[in-house]
Structure formats: C-alpha cells, structure tokens
Length: 212
Image (cartoon, rainbow, N blue to C red):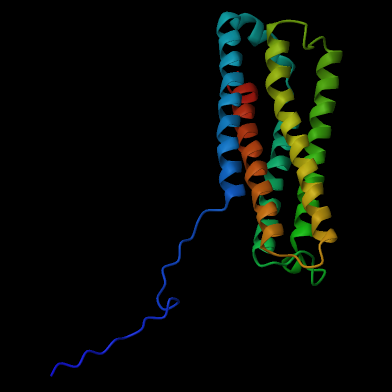
C-alpha cells in the first residue's frame, strides 16, 4: 500500500520579487540623453564658426574675464555638492533640519543653498553679458558673438529651469504632510538634471574660456 502525502506551498513563501527601475528616473535619464545631443549640436556650431574665423576668435576672446568666469564656475560646481547633500537627506526621508548644524540639515536647507548658488551664477552671467555688450560684443555683432551667446545663453536657460525645479521640490516638501519616497524621488530626479547642467558648463567653460 502506497501512501501519498500532499504538501501545500504558500503562495507567499519564497516568492520572487522583481525590482523595476523607477519610471520617472528612467524617463529623466532618457530626456537628459536628448539634451546631450542638443548641447553637442551647440558645441559643433561653436567649433565650426571658430574654425572659419580664427583671427576673429583671437581678437574677441581677449575681452573675456577668465578669473571672473572661473569664480562663477566654482560657485556653480559648489551647488552640485550641496544638491547632492540634499539628495542624501531626501533618501533618508528627512525633509527639514533637526538642528542648526549643517550635518543635521534636511533636503530643504541643502536645496535652498543650491538654489542660492545657482541664482548667483545666473546673476553673474547676466553681469558678464552686460560687460561684453558694453565692449561691443553682442548676439548680432559677429560670428563670435552669436556663438558665445547661443551656447552660454541656452545653458543659462537650463540653469534657470533647474532653479524653478528646486523651488517646486522645496514647496512640495512643505505642502505634504508626510515626506515619503515619492517626494524623495522628485528630489533625486532634480539632482540628475542639476548635475547635468553643471557638467555641461564645465565643458563650455573649458571650450570658451580656456581653449582660446
């Protein structure tokens, strides 16, 4: 006589889990990929015009204030670090500070500092534009002016968009009752964008101000 015993397996026992990537984060990365192509086109325009007018480039780049632009660049790069500290706070679901010390700051405080640094950068770029225009270098003055203002101007618009994104994320942190993973994801996505515009500016600074 053969006895058959049956065993039941709980549907939850050792059930495989699938960790899917966040749709918003993946979409942002794909969009930033298209932005890379956009700025690659601007770089191509700059190099093409430069190759056809080397004497003009040599004369016009003499008006650039390298120490001033370097200081502005350092300010923008510093904002990338403060932004990342804000991401660390968001990942531990800490929206606001628990004390006066920076090590106790939350996402809101770090993102506010990042916003301030970004605003200083944009203000510095506007002041540089005003100085160059007073020296006769404008968007329509010559090929160099067109290339300079197109490349740096579009980047400035992207930085401004990042500043608006900072305000939205900060406002959302105050609007919700509980700061959760959804709000943390928004902060992380904004950091992707902000790091991107910082890296692009480093490339622009090297091409426009250093490689003369």
